[in-house]
Each structure stands twice: as C-alpha cells, then as structure tokens.
Image 1: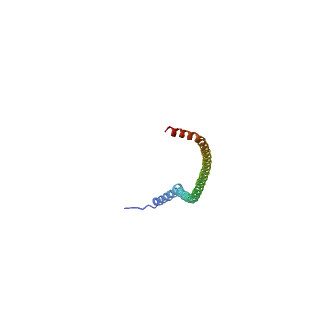
Image 2: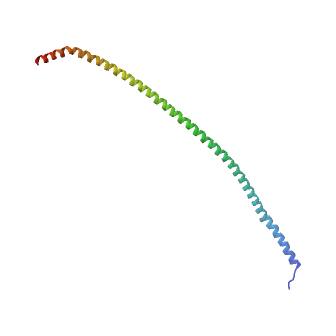
Length: 140
C-alpha cells in the first residue's frame, strides 16, 4: 500500500520551510513593503487633496468677494459717470439758453432800431404821400 518514509517526509518539510523562508524574504516582504508604501502615499495624497480643497474653498470665497467688490465699484463709477454727464448736459443747456437770450435781445434791439428807422422814413414820406393823394384827387 502506501508507505510513509520519514526521511522523505523530513526532507520535504525542510524544503517546504526553506522555500517558505525564501519566498518570505524575496517576495512577501517586498510586496508587503510596497503595499504599505502605496497605502501611505495614498493617505498623503488624500490629505493633500483635502488641504487643496480647503484652499480652493478659501480662494473661491476670496474670488467671489473680489467680484462683488468689483461690481460695487463698477456701479459707483457708472453712477458717477451718469451724474457727471447730467451735470455737463445741464451746463451746456444753461449756456445755450444764455446765448439764445442774448441773441434774442440783440434781435429785439435790431428790430426796434429798424422800426424806428421805418417809422422815421414813413413820417418823412407822409408829405409826399399827401401831395400825391391831392394830385390824384384833383385828377378825379
């Protein structure tokens, strides 16, 4: 049947433990060391990512604050520009009204002068018109 040989069993056991020892030294320890290093690297990267996420939240908040501040400044500047434009328009309108009033006064003065000249001219022509009317009536 089956014979059990203790020498063969002992040699097989020794070879098994020697092989196990060699595998442990050459395969399992480096593999476990690599896996531990990889886990530590992943943990460091995750921590760095969390820190960066925290930094990005701060940066986003700062950026939003800057945008809000810029909007407020732009609104103020736009309002100042509109107010300045209105003031300039009012000044221009006032200046034009003064010019129109001056030209209106000058026109009125010239009109009065022409009226006086015309009146004087007509008064000087009245005796001639009377004589011409008399001449016309006498012809009739």
